[in-house]
Image (tube, rainbow, N blue to C red; front, top):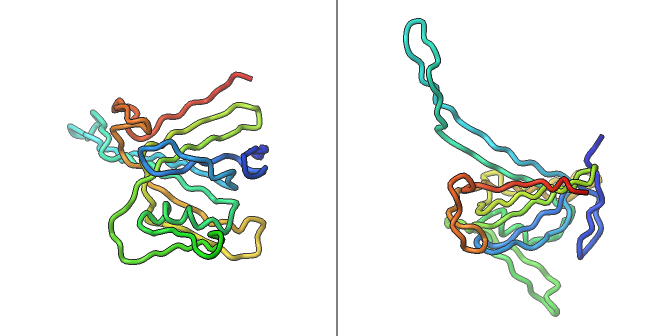
Length: 187
């Protein structure tokens, strides 16, 4: 059974698996609406310590932790999101009433961080919340397909960075340095 639930947002009603909240790092993010696809990849690189002959595995240690999130937006013309995914782009509006949206991407090599919250609404009614305290645009940047498909929105990719503070400025335990996830199973 596909995870297709109705997402009620202040802007629109979407059919999709999640709502994404996005904003500058250190602040509580705002809703960007429902998304068509979403993935959270958590990886570990393990150092295995072997001893003896024949070699026997004696211990394992984590050498590297990686967390990456990507999602496909349902909105094709929301260039304000591009500045976050590209991590070094600038966004502005122009024209009468600010109806022209601009994104500029050049040679800036400093990267801005963002805060992301994922709210996944399961078909059984449970709600999962994932709080990603500090993220930066991934090396994949933005992938925008112009194929003849149902959803033309771009795919955004972010790397999750280690953070010492939550969005309110409260110190995080080391066990929560990348993200905090919770599920509400109360119906």
